[in-house]
Amino acid sequence: MVQAVFPRWANAAFVAGFAVTGLFIVVVPGVAMIEAYEPPITGEDHASEQPVAFDHRHHVLDDGIDCRYCHDGVERSASAGRPPTSRGRNSHVQVWNHAPALDAVRLSFAKSQPIRWRRVYQLPDFVFFHHAAHLARGVGCASCHGRVDQMAKVYQAVPLTMGWCLDCHRHPENALRPEDRITDMAYAPSAEEQHRIGTALVSSGHISPPLDCSGCHR
Image (tube, rainbow, N blue to C red; front, side, top):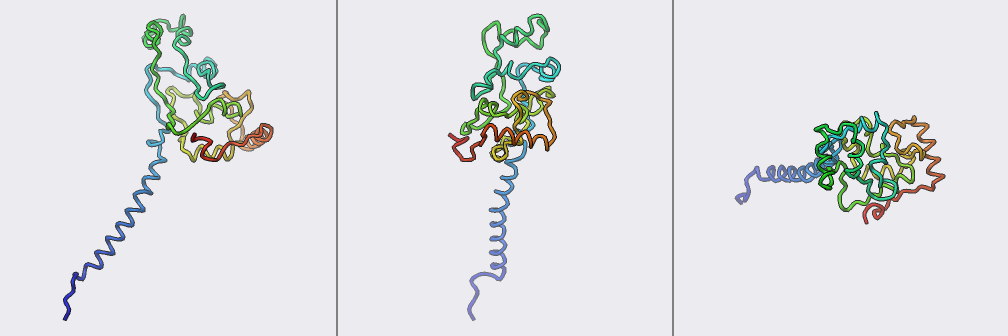
């Protein structure tokens, strides 16, 4: 009688090991892909601590300051820009001019050293985004930045994933608005009205956002 080289349980162990390995190969990448779209990874809803507690609710909603007053590069360059200290200092020459909350602003102005604001929206180095190109075609600030006028601390309002960006490029009519409403945070037409206005703007502006890789990866 020929003696078996492997014990009887060897076949079962092989099948079980193969199944576990296959499950590992499928499940681990699947979980990783799902996690990659979760807010802790994408940065959505995250608010960075800033060196100066700047409350957009007061400045935008109460005082009616337009986005372009501080972010004056948004209509002509890739970056929206950040205001120089002198602009904030001049705004508070008579209002809150001795408030401790503005000590960092006064020190920055006195030493001619810019305030080190922390970025809230951070795209990878291999992604190209141009603010002026989007505004010129009718994409409103709130489409990407949310209701900043209701934020005590500015946070990332959207996931900024490639899929999210491509959805907008495929259906730009969902994000476009009239030129005089670009910085209007309260602009909120009905879905039907948005589709009508957006479709008209796509047609009149001959808008066709790029869907190929080189559109955003240059």
